[in-house]
Image (cartoon, rainbow, N blue to C red; front, side, top):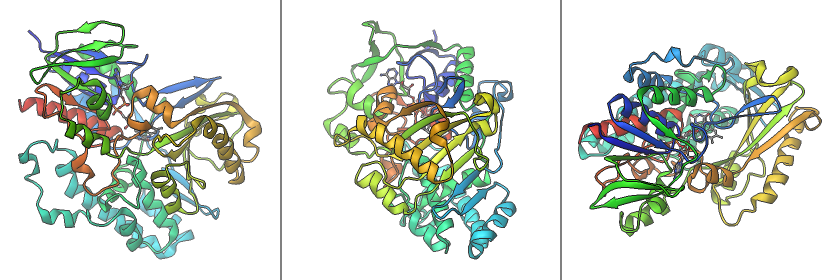
Length: 492
Ligand SMILES: Cc1cc2nc3c(=O)[nH]c(=O)nc-3n(C[C@H](O)[C@H](O)[C@H](O)COP(=O)(O)OP(=O)(O)OC[C@H]3O[C@@H](n4cnc5c(N)ncnc54)[C@H](O)[C@@H]3O)c2cc1C
């Protein structure tokens, strides 16, 4: 008889693990509290405008491809993608514009315009980033880091080679003279929701992933990834139960025996439970008292979440020639911005503003030649001191005014539709710890070791998948966490 697996949550992690488990012959039932698959990767249509409400950039697509291959499917039947050009347009506080391309020569020509002193350093830093990737990927990424044997590939001297003892900011400041390139390279730490002034310089591996390997947009919208994974898992035989939350996990003799659902039902038969729910929520709220020690619970409470996001989706009746597909409007003082987010836990007074304008690539996303602006500002994780009802109104208006100052003239009067997503909404919709959008932060040199692993040691059959677990947040890492679960299952 097939082993029965229950998966809590149909986020990317839950979908990826369900497809692989079903392909291996498990009987898989997925319980998702919301009405659609994808978790934080969603899309919405407002008055004819289409928005991806979560990720806008796909990196390391080979991880996604490998997943489909392992399930015996050719990914091109489900999804195609390409790289926008430029990869991203950066606009600095003084109006300097930097178009960044994955073609280094093209980018160097751009840098010659505004920071000629750093044109050579750009390429050197990307080589450094690639070396970091080669040194760290097998040890930290493609590795569950679960048993002692997983640590074999690491020696104390490796920590020196992977820049674990300085911060991203310190290392970047050493490599570049101009404030433009410094701010540019510090930005990549936000890809896992952390501060460049706190995160270890090992995270300088991220530029390699986007600038050397490529940053992609999925044709038809990023939500295509969630759709494709859902289809794959269903084709493999996984059964999905939407609008059904798991309220409690049942444990007997250090083993999960079933789950209680919010509609009053109880599912008794369960050989294996994989929680794609946020690891903190799973450990602190879904497991019954006594299943894990109080010490472990205290440890989980103390893990710092990643930052959250303040999202503003504007359907606008016009276009702005200066906007590309991905656009960043940098703040003047990056340190103060991260201080606001992580120390003062307030919305930054001078924010860096990201705009995904997919209508630049696909005009069907905005009717009548307009624009669909998905605006994201890094935000603090939730804290009792914040009054989000007030912030939501005042900050939306502040961001619109700011963008008009930055050159999006007549933005306010061109708005047809407007919708926001605040940190408490991320928390409520997806159960994410304090509204974090990338799981745990890396604001600590030991964060890779503190992050919950993909199996809970206290229980024989409880596995954890998703951005709040090893190896971290973001599409490729979340997919990798599902492969880690599969590897740990093989080790049983
Ligand atoms: C605004 C935004 C922008 C982002 N940009 C990027 C980007 O450009 N590139 C990138 O790579 N990443 C990006 N990310 C991060 C990426 O979206 C996440 O890392 C990833 O989607 C997380 O997937 P997950 O499986 O870990 O969890 P989630 O997406 O949180 O899925 C967990 C699922 O479990 C369900 N659930 C929780 N509790 C229960 C329960 N008790 N019972 C039943 N179901 C439950 C939730 O409803 C949810 O569907 C972004 C995220 C956001 C929000």
